[in-house]
Length: 78
Image (cartoon, rainbow, N blue to C red; front, side, top):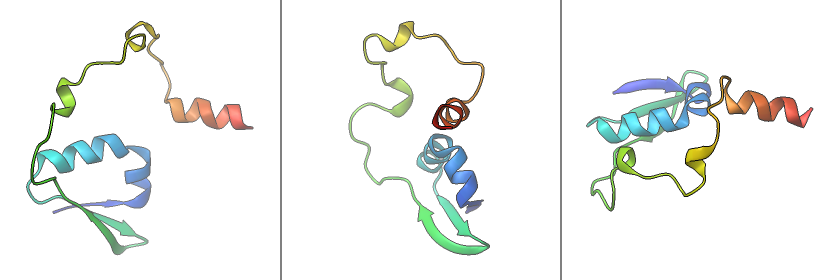
């Protein structure tokens, strides 16, 4: 089972959730070195695979950002 920290999960949630969905053993999330949670793949697949989803109309025209959007939000909140 892959082990990650809460910070790693926070910084790249989508990446880790998709990794857990692809894997068989899931992810173990640690809080200060202690097990806090397990992220396991869902047993049944309902609907469209994540990678096959289509963007909501209008999103395809948005510019691609060269920086992490979380960084921009953090600056905006200051």
